[in-house]
Length: 181
Image (cartoon, rainbow, N blue to C red; front, top):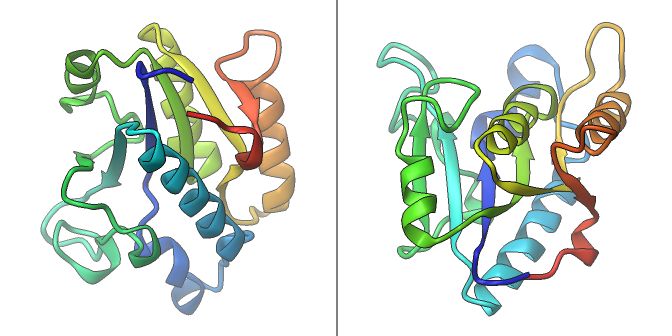
């Protein structure tokens, strides 16, 4: 990849890794997800690729309001001072945020996308970025979710990989080990 690329880490916040304590739902393959994201971060840092964290935020009365412990980015992938953090209040990280403007200012037109939650914010990020003209790489083993009432998390991930990387191709699919910056 070239310098027109950024690593976009979507909503990898503490809440997703402790949710099981509150409602019994466990983030699928959580340790591997963190390992894969750390591998991507290392590759991006080694090539001076911008790293952008997207952080979902709710109102002040929420358990994931800005500044609360569950709102924080997971400590195993903690941003460095040079990394960019974009706060968002919707599944779409471009809606009412400065993300698009900041990417354009950096000259970025290609995004490597990883994060949580597959069927919500990761899917929305891929589709919205595509609509804005970005070339996307969805890290096929770099996003996760929870079991639903009708599908396992692994089925949801497989389904979204096929849809996002399918005929319309909102993103090219690549496994962590094959992503290069």
